[in-house]
Amino acid sequence: MTLKLDGISTGYGQVQVLYDLSFEARPGEVLCLLGRNGAGKTTTLKAIMGLLPLQSGTISLDGQTISTLPAHEVPRQGIAYVPQGRRLFKELTVAENIDVGLMTRGKSAATRERILTMFPRLRERLTQQAETLSGGEQQMLATARALCLDPSVLLLDEPTEGLQPSMIALITDTVRTMRDEGKAVILVEQRIEAVLSLADRVAFIENGHGREVVETQTLRDDPSLLQKYVGI
Amino acid sequence: MEFGPHLMLAILEGAVGASVLALTALGLSLVFGVMRVVNVAHGEFFMLGAVVAWFVANSIAGHPAIGFLAALAIAPLIAGAVAMLVDRLILKNVAYDPEATIVGTIGVLYILQQSALMIYGPEARPVEPPFSHRIALPWVEWGENGLAFFYPWGLSITSYKLFVIVAAIAILLAFWLVMSRTRLGLIMRATQMDRETALAFGIPVQRVYSIVFGFGAALAALAAVLIVPIQQAHYLMGHDPLLLSFIVVIIGGLGSVRGTIVAALLIGMSDGIISVFLSPTLSKIIATLLVALVLVFRPQGLFGKKMA
Image (cartoon, rainbow over all chains, first blue to last red; front, side):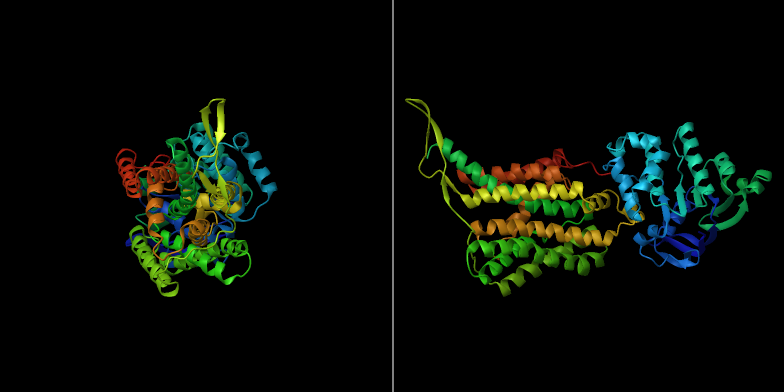
């Protein structure tokens, strides 16, 4: 399904962070949000999830407006969120974290099986408290919990931050699999090489304003935009 | 009475108090843990439970057990419903702001208390216990033939008081089962740990808050129904449970179920024992002193986690 942001403005209380931001994420593609720290990337994902009230603009999923729904209804439309810093329910077990994911859209044991087959490490640790997992395992769990929604749109906020290379490879493979299954993936990622290898299109954000949205190939040929918006 | 039997009596009385206190404090702790709301009106939900119990018990004819059982079912429901209304009308409208909710619940405290005064009146009225047999308790003594049992004069307890202890344990177990084994418990725990992420996984946090606030008040009301055959219902009876619940919740660690129960036992038992041997005022002084020490040396409480 296509997720469309149309001229959204939002922020935290009196502090406005996003100004008139527009872009769309299409099925079967990875869209990467790129910008400096504090540009508003995480805020964009939170706004999509309905966690921040919009001052203006609309967010729609295949033409259906979702930005007027209460926040807890947004994930039920099939939008799954892997927040920055993982945000697991730390004192719940691995199994319980997965259960919360499954409950979101009433998914069955079959979905659970499929997800645990994707992440066999989690199956071995089902009764362990989430906070006792290693960083990589926690990221697996955060991803697994989101995939339990069987989402059509997947939002990932710096999923490879602080992980060792083998874990990064696992997460990026998972993202590719999701794209190939026809999901729309929105990825916030800082490492340029990961962006260039994973993204289909890149949307630049600068100080809360949406800038160019370009095909990744364009950036590979001409990195000047990277220089301009992220200083690399 | 000698010291031994006297101590045993004090411990039993303390256990009754501790049981009721554990239920009341658990309600306060649950509300704070999940919603981060300091419910100053918690004692009034306790009072509401007792007063409703009196009305129910007195409007049902027949054996006192029927009225009592009806009160046991109806009082928590009414207290819970009033609490959910308070959540919708007041707490939600101040967006669960920590300071505003304190002021708001102080207002609720007076509304409930004065309403009780107007409707129920200033009298203290008892509810007849469903059963109450005096059970003489044995004590052992080293006599001519070795160890021997005997029944010291005055060492006795009523069957109803034993029932309160057993009922409280049963309710605590049921609470634990709900929290750890059911979907509702999972949702409440997830909301407690991370409100925003709970929303991002389809948990209707607003509805969970209403349920939790109602649930907390229902626990206080349930505790009051259990105690009202022993203590009488009065419109000002909410003060002590509120104070003691706060003491328990601070010592145990805000939001920690285990800490709340351990601290309720500690405070309830010591309150009972010190009240019997010395004076009730002294026991409150000691409990409050304990709170001060905990706040200085272990601000997160015995079992609480340090807040990030």
